[in-house]
Length: 217
Image 1 (cartoon, rainbow, N blue to C red):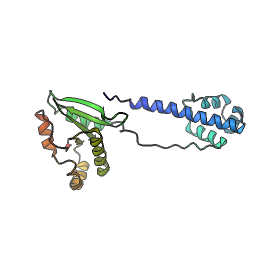
Image 2 (image 1 turned 30 degrees about the vertical axis):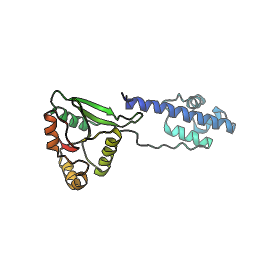
Image 3 (image 1 turned 60 degrees about the vertical axis):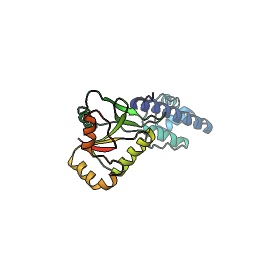
Image 4 (image 1 turned 180 degrees about the vertical axis):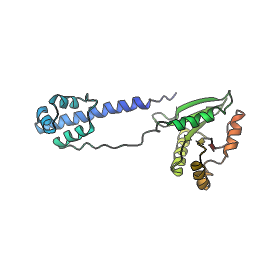
């Protein structure tokens, strides 16, 4: 069974680890430079006890500007960058969209949300997975389509890595999304050959769709 760390817990763990690493680097550089904590503190106008807390990685509320200026005094750059890491948290519109699909499913089918890919260590997850007696169909939900090619590529990679034969792309039925899908129809047909109504018809009788499809709800 693949377990998934909560996003909030992962964020806090990464923050603690990052503060510890930066603190150690600041301390080692200060010692090599022959500076005291008080000298560094005076240079950036904070207390020497705060410098000590930063070096020990326990200043959990330290401003990023303080870390950067302290690093600059010591001859260090402290860059801040963001990298993709798993799927973003779902917003209210996405949750409502998933709920609209959930109520259409017959009782025998199972419904699970935020299901991690069946790949150890992979942080990606399906927004939902529908299960039957001997089948499972993952679902990814989009409340507002933006980059259709990027969305299709993301779902295709997840389907491949998860080993899923069929996937449902669930899209909110809005004027904007209908227009985007209409314009992108030729590019989507290969990845999602089954029509939305056909996908829903299969699910309503408790069967798995025979192919991937886009469902507008």
